[in-house]
Picture (cartoon, rainbow, N blue to C red):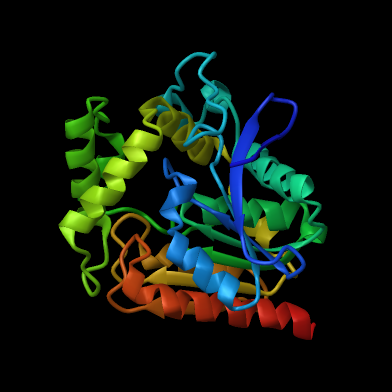
Length: 294
């Protein structure tokens, strides 16, 4: 896969593409600690089949992109208490990484689709660089107001637990997390989950990057007021059964963006099960068509 230099922090971003580069581009941004492979190839091909040039990439501190491990460990407690100084970067820096991928591909404007932390990055991209965003799809995310989109105690504990480095322990923990956060209305086969988690581990296992990304989420400012100025057609899609970012996160995001469409999906948790991907792809495609109509 190709890599591109990102910004002044000496970051290189790994990415790949699907479909015809002459078609409108959909930029897929993944969530906390997740690699580009969490956008499954069949999902990317499905979007490409709908007439898009599809781009997915590894955020900094995941996968095969640069790991910013030279500095001190972030102090999450201090950040949550109002001192963000130990965060090595913010979501705004990660939005610049997304732009670097578009720049490397010669893409002036893209339909931006982000899930969870990726939705936060997509929101920041639409705020800071509106000229580059044709449409925005914010999936199972939140606007950063510290009030909406809270986790259940059990789901929140999953974010703070030690992350194993030994292969078998890491795989078991990964599968257990996916099951706990998954969609109760669309359960996935544990054996299939294990295959995917093992493949992700073998591609890249750097749990230290997760902590720095989490620090970026906590240290970044509330986007609610700035989202009032977003003019790109916006879809906010959220699972009714999401235990990690409850549906109020999606509702608050949709309320903040003028004209946003809110879609609450019954039985959906904090994942992208294969059974729901046609619905999600159709919704993203319809939102992109709103940009064309404008």
